[in-house]
Length: 505
Image (cartoon, rainbow, N blue to C red; front, side):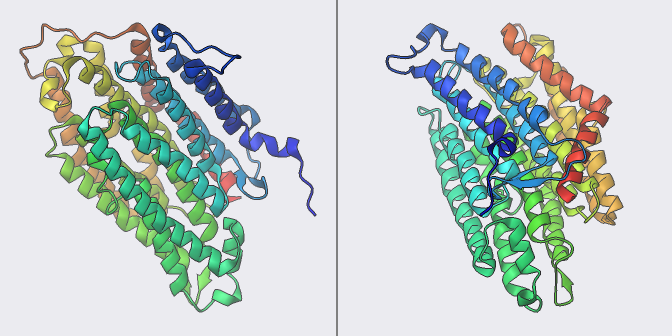
């Protein structure tokens, strides 16, 4: 019987342990523990946001402190449930930072700022996303996935007096449940074929003599799994829930949904495809990798094109960013399509892109929260004159949109450059070209919003947009990170490359 070394296994889940402890602290601050801890007074409930945010900033250091050393290959721990490698640590830091920034952004919303349960749910969802980033077993994958998804259903309906919020949550729940069932069916097929739930053991069996001449069952399982993941990352044609959910959910929640669950899902998608269907798996005379690369490339083209084309006609900021998110998923899939055995570029490009996208999109939604709270509007036309109502808020939105468009010196420029470069090096020049063309199309609707803020006039220009000092510091810090990633991206890209090397080792 294999011995279990707790001290050796503990570093792999230190971030999750930290988030679990933080959840208890947040719960205690909100409702207290009878006879032990008293809850915060109602007038001080806003402090829960700072407890959750700064707690997660501290927890984000755990993967760096207890993560594997540079160049160290990944290892399976906790009975093969978790793979402890540098890539998992990279994505854990990404999703935990997303949760921390979301808590700070929520302080700008009158309906969320003093809702302690909101921050508790954010912490729990972040815990699930962190687990998902390093899962290596079908059981752990599904448990982690639902730990992320179920809290998001709740958060989407958090405005109980808003019919749009309730409607979007119901749609999200129905579509999400359906996609989870499809994903679970794909998992059950893989388990039925191999008798294993560990994704690396499944790969060993699928590459054995039993499957050398029978590719159809493997492809069916591959399609089912990709459909399930396609919903989670809002890739076309599994994107139909995205615009309505983004528009109906509170802006703070929309920002979190658009980055945290997407980053964790992409982390798992990369790990799953490379582990279960590696380049060495050949059934008959066909490499299974060729099939999933084709699926991913087609989904990338459809997502980029449809997302950008439909975004051109949007008049609501959140719907525009919903279609933008679909297009961004398409760009990221370019990096997934560029994955090759022994090549770290595709993995590193995806990791860097999702890291910079996390800060970029949360910055944009941070501006939407403060603007909609004071004007009651999320329409693009109502942004007219924003540069004169509050030049700093307008500047923050400009930085976010320039980054989404891929214009230097914002981070999106290098994000897209690394993705397109990885595609070219993988021989997918046509896919990189489609990405460049779509980036040019997207430039139009991003610049239109910037033009409205700085050029168009409004009758409300004499009504300034007020912003608290902590909120201003949040937007300022996020803006600085987006600019720094666009000027000196090498440190984060090198970290992502080290993570890719540990995954491929």
